[in-house]
Length: 216
Ligand code: GAR
Image (cartoon, rainbow, N blue to C red; front, side, top):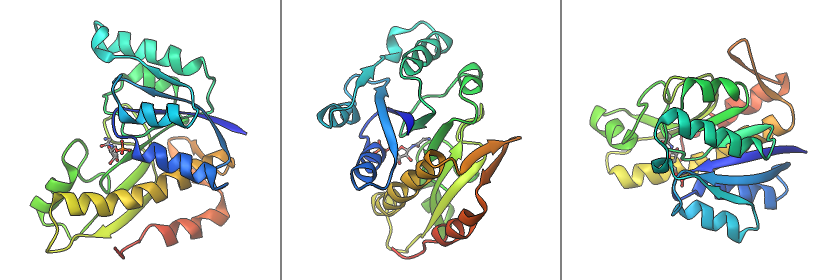
């Protein structure tokens, strides 16, 4: 069974979605550890309560981004994961870190990338007046919120939406597509090859079904 390490900075609801999928027998992975750059992250407490090993490395204790990423990689590698899952891990990563985990580092972002990288994606989508918004799981590259796309889910933007209703609608989809992407990886059906996402042929049809989730 493939081993994963999950990195969180806060609430950890995407991590919880992985725990729930695993408990339901839908995610054949060992969650070896949950690591946070914020000692007070709620996600750490949730993981510990679920009996998962947790570690916290406070980024403020390190002199430079490079020093922190070096320590973080050492901490992750103690668990020898096949895949590192960024689940609301709000740090810009150094190129060395990203290179070290090339092809085994996934992120979820609350927009239809390449639109709206960075912060405040839901408010920016509302401000731009887009009609479709959503979320993206992608392999991580050195560029922030960028990289080969594994799966996306789209949601409609309603006239009645504000930032929080739109965020909630997107988050429901995050909790669906992220465990799905990790499951594909765990089953050996998803990989990065020459900078492109390769999904086992039979999955392409599934992916097309999941992507345009336009209902609520
Ligand atoms: C999620 O919406 C995730 O997509 C976003 O942070 C939130 C974390 O929530 N990530 C990014 O913006 C990365 N650029 P969670 O802690 O409840 O999973």
